[in-house]
Image (cartoon, rainbow, N blue to C red; front, side, top):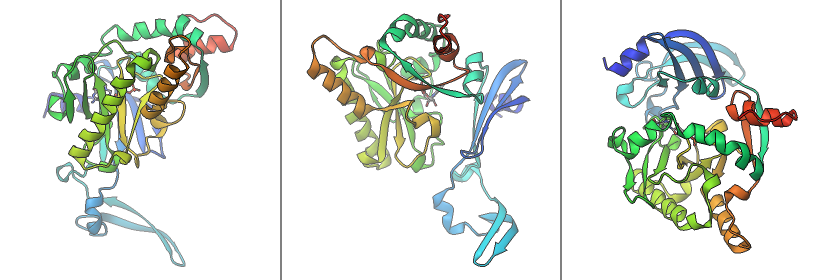
Length: 316
Ligand code: G7M
């Protein structure tokens, strides 16, 4: 048993943080050795390669129960023969241990609000929030990847250039098996871009170069055409080191790829092109009003946008 598996088995359940019956996910809060931990679990997609064996009692559907039939319609309940050895796991399970209060809030069920972040609100308040998020080890996992301390065996492509370079590798959300659920991250080497707010027209060649290298690398590794991938950035992201999401077009990511959260790389490049053309003064994403979704548990809601909505001063 590995150390990680021992940790997972030692998880003491406390409460359910969230459940999504549509996306078949469950988030649990508990403790391991007295320290808080979160498990996020997701039922995996059906393995299309095993479809020919779907009704087999030994390799497919098991313990079948007919619930009802009506004319030509029949519905059953069944369990399915599955094994991680065949690249055919029943669930993908993530463990965050030890976790922080920010993780607990992020994975809790919560009311969502649409907020409008003006350039002034960004400059006056949000930059302070971001500065706090860059400190304190929250980006350790990013630096571990960039310095090849973790996940190096999973790297799909690396351009090692300090300014133009990036690492393309599987996002932790991907099960590494289901091609139509392909989910990669492109993490840039440079450390001077914390979010899209730092982008200006000067970054256009950089973004175009990343875009083209991602598409070439993904098509070589996974035999996917360029029009089978969507490349986007989150605003707000969870981690303030510039990175892009590279996801199969067929994969429904729910809230993570929705309007109010995901911005297409192509759209970002076009916006920067227009800024360059307008060009009265040097413009960038810092000059735009950006509208996005925020959960009530998010610190940006509690500290900035809720007070502003209620006419109080932000407490950042
Ligand atoms: O919302 P934001 O753009 O910051 O998303 C960060 C992405 O990084 C999410 O899609 C996460 O699933 C992914 N991610 C987070 N962590 C902690 C890791 C990690 O340790 N390894 C990898 N490969 N991806 C991660």
